[in-house]
Image 1 (cartoon, rainbow, N blue to C red):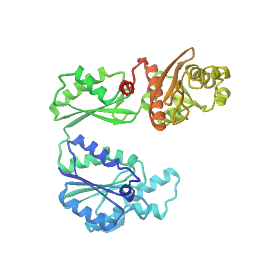
Image 2: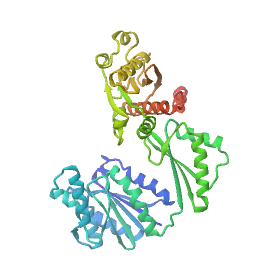
Image 3: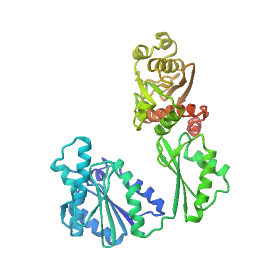
Image 4: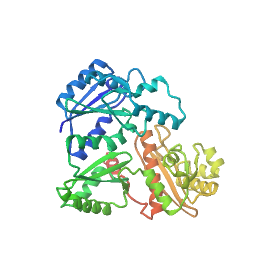
Length: 428
């Protein structure tokens, strides 16, 4: 089956937006043992879009058009498809109903610009968008299944999994005999995983394809087999892998690290509090991004300055003078203060030097101290994360959540995180 991708947008042509959507689509097509045939990127130009749709539909079984579904004048996909297939634009009743529901739920008043998103080629049927205001749409032209999708990645991804892949199977009469198991891991590198698999599982079966995909801050490991006769083999080897790497496995499918932490807290009936300096509230933001977070999190403290560490959490001035803000003594005091102030069961605290300035020979940029635990049982660890400021904050936030997850589940917290990073640092 030949599947082509047509991506549209001046921002893609200029480099203002990096194309991550085609990579995601290509990765997802692997679940059907397919790879893209042609990928084409064009700007917001109606004649060029029309000619590209016609051209690609003649040589493809499936054409996925990405982008150009919004409410503004430069969103041209519906118009271009209308002209390419010779089907007039009409107000699509299903698209209108979805937009009305989306607007009502948010208390928005639909404008003429919004309503533009409901004008679709008459020959098209909608593809539901569970996130955004613009539905996708599809038709068959020149025996090619054409599917138009939004350019916003958070809107595209659930549409690919829930709608595009099933439609491709149906259009191509692909038997749904591909079996995929996905595990999500944190705290180990891709090469570390592969080296361990080579050592521990030298007889890994050829019929179980093993694949790794970095989705920061986690790694997704995929086990793929084709044919019902290999389903049990898939399950057996996925289980062997999961058992061996159990300390690092945070869940299956699309499990997020914050979701895994919240699930662990909920399972044990614990409430967490956070005390953050260098991460500026990112730990609390990650935890509360998950539905149901109120049952496991009530309060967090962002104490960026020394004055606020003293005033909000009761860290002693002398402790700060003697040890400095980035120290074991201070993060332990921050965790104790957060527990006392919030009445929570367990705390996580963090202080570090995110850079690019502020480091010294004794305490270089990238140094971070974490403390976690319950009253009377506070633990602390030091890490060195030699990376840019945003990468530092993102990685430190992930480490903090995982340490609490491990503590709650009774897993080791002295794990040698990202050991390869340390080896590279020493080698250099």
